[in-house]
Length: 174
Image: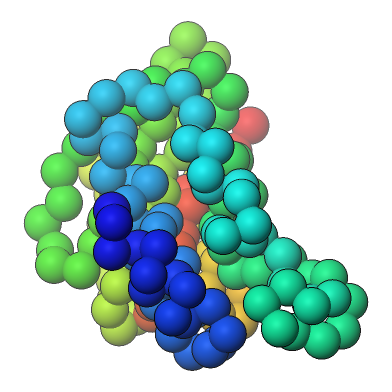
């Protein structure tokens, strides 16, 4: 993780490279549940060094304060159901990082997916019975946690498209 701070400082004023840094950071957050049941993100996630805002002189920018892609990534990650636990999963494609969470007693689930490559079809299997629809949210360079649609779940399987270089979240519809 020591490489992230110099990389962030180097890229912070460059919009193209900043997107890359945001994907590195959100991908790192999605890998954590593979090793533990995290209760929160680290406090450094919200410091000025890793600001969720730009403008008004932050990193030499002009104009009003506005949320960065990093803000939308964290907001989307925060859409995980409250008190949900990390669920086991496997990924069989390169360039994909995932985390799955569920509050089984309430039937609430979220699957977070970072696609580091081109647009591609995706299939999520093993979705619990009782979940019939998943809402799809995407954050990328242009979209800010935008709901892009819904996907029907058939026999525990959802098939949909992952946006290129995007952070996609599937949330069970209530």
